[in-house]
Image 1 (cartoon, rainbow, N blue to C red):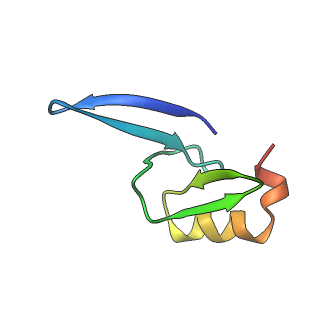
Image 2 (image 1 turned 60 degrees about the vertical axis):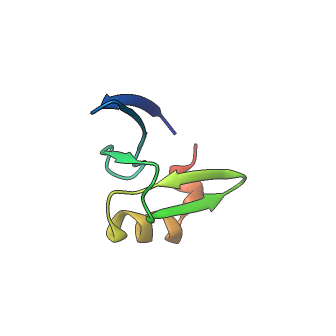
Length: 60
C-alpha cells in the first residue's frame, strides 16, 4: 500500500493507492478492507468487491 501526504487548503490529507486500479484515494474513505493486519483503501465499491473476493491476489 502506497501513501502520499498532500497539503490542501492548510491541511494535510493522507492518501493511499487503491491496489485494484492504482487510483489515489483519501484514507478517510468508508471503502476499506482489513487483511492480514493491514488496511486497504478503495475508490469504488467495485474495486473493494474485487479485493474482498481474493485479497491474497492484491495484498503482495
